[in-house]
Image (cartoon, rainbow, N blue to C red; front, side, top):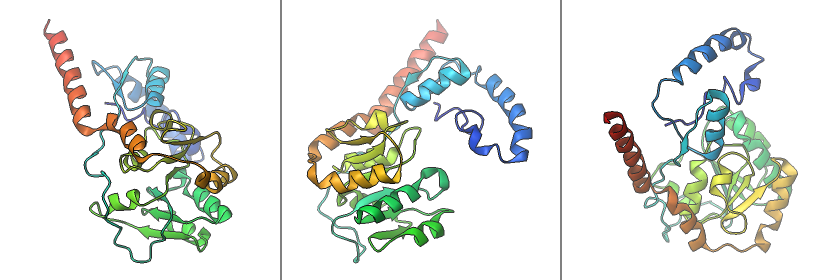
Length: 255
């Protein structure tokens, strides 16, 4: 089950080229990885994007089976988040705060559009993002798993600025009945259907997201449509599909 061919060896290797140690080691690692990639009987990709990478870098065909989402955990309730000073209407981000996630784009966009943005997560970019954040932005740091669903459920929409291999947080938002505004790349293309459960933006720029945030209140999304679109990612369905693939492969090898 392939989350993606190693990012720092293939699809995103240019982001690591400034490191001299990486330059020296990468060639050896790629040779080893390509040999290792020939060993599995079958490879399963987590998204259409990863399926393409497996073909490009490993020259192997694969099937796509989307990762599992706990749809029951994120089912809508009437409970409000426990944070007392949370804004009434807010957009949401749930993410590790590291550079490639491009949370700074969303912070700048929320500042420009003057809309409420709640950021959940910790990481190396926390201090930098805190310094960029204007008065409409709330940074909560870590939120426990029990309280997390209610933050999704009471948001206006979930924001995704970077290219994800898949993007579980986008699915969690949909299961919570809330639409997604995402950069049109990677896993977002498997998850978001424009006009039904969200918006796909042609670029991951501050202006593109700011415009989408300003115009969001002119759009209408039905919670039931968002939820329905995410049920295909249910973890019980995932278990069933994976078990069928294992059984099929086992039977094939026996014969």
